[in-house]
Amino acid sequence: MSDTSGIGFDREADTGPADEHISEAFALLGNETRLNILLAIWEKQVPLAEDNTVPFSRLFERVNCDDRGTFSYHLDQLEGQFITQHTERGGYELTIPGLKLVRTIIAGTGVSDATLEPTDIDQPCPLCDAPTEIAYREGVMFLTCTECEGVAPGKADIESVLLGNYFEPAGVNGRSPEELHAASVAASVRRARTLFNGLCPTCSGPVVGRLECCPNHEPTSDCANCGRIIGAWAHLECRICKHYAVPNPKWLALFHPAVVALYDDYGVSPRVHAADFQSARRVFGLVYDHELDIVSVNPPQVTVTAAIDGNEVHLTFDETASVVDVRR
Image 1 (cartoon, helix red, strand yellow):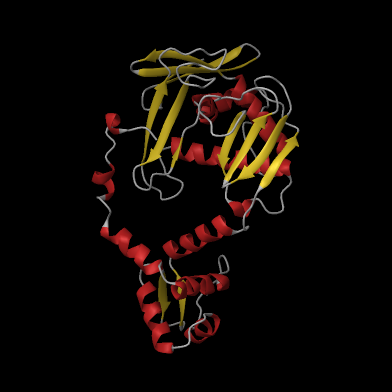
Image 2: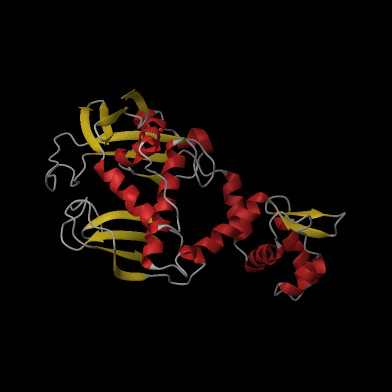
């Protein structure tokens, strides 16, 4: 991601250079027995259950450790940050950070070597109306056109890409290509909306935004300046954990109440449901129908227009990728 110092971004001021507690957390987890303890406690977890504690004896049986003293030592190391002991219940329970850690591990390794070879889906290319394909590799769901060069022929690592969404491997199992497309779009929209609202979806940290515009954009072809079909993009990045997204402002317009109200007046839903392929198709079409005009390059400013039956909503985004003006 590009440098963000121009808008007051200073990660060291927020987190410190290589915070000591971060290093200590990694050190705690660099042991197979401790990870097995966390997983063994998680297996007992039942949402909203009154008692999710696991007794010492059951943990010791479940985890592959021959010496009770060594096992107790590993429990002590985890206690406080990742697990807590409830003496009145006689067992151990995951703390919220511990539970989140296990969920992250499961999400990232839920399906070993999850892949999907390019597969046709019923989603026409918004640029040329040609058939499209969906594929999954290395944690990213790609939508590509079978004929045109896609939205970023000069920038993308994959040819003819229209959309690239981060998607956890655990979500691939058991879904058809159409369901994967809907689920990945729903996940991407959720992530972008949360970042746009100033909240990191990973660590709950504050988010800094920046708008960039191509200085001499050529919107009808592969732009020689930026290599993108659309000449403006937003950088949204967490100050704490570096979680980021680079959405097109046309997608960000989807989240504004004025645009939502416009669609609602015509009975059109801008919501994507992970189990509804048609909702992903609909929203994909809405976004690509939005018009984007570069108002200024220095400072960056764009206007996105959503329109139905002659009724229009115009949103102006400033250099921080924030909406600063709404016209109807």
